Length: 107
Image 1 (cartoon, rainbow, N blue to C red):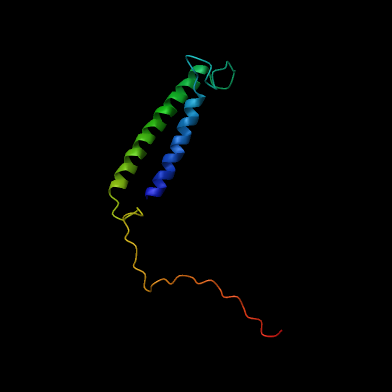
Image 2: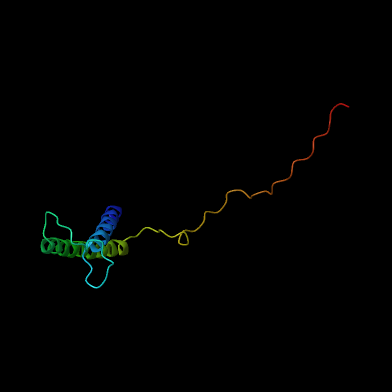
């Protein structure tokens, strides 16, 4: 459940970034959609659509953030390497001895 919600959260974040970058910039030339292009939708309609989409994605972002926070506090399994105690070795580990050079059998 948590991984599915995390994927949805990441998709919402990416969509929110795209929608914010498409909006018309009021104070400078940083916006990508700030030109005077004549499209199928008027400028006012496009701004209204982008504003509503931004509000919807922002609400989805907050909802998924809160849900992920709630799900992460209810976890009971250990997920840290430091929380797990290492298992005791069953046999002592012997040091590796270097191989002895072979003696020639015939001359």
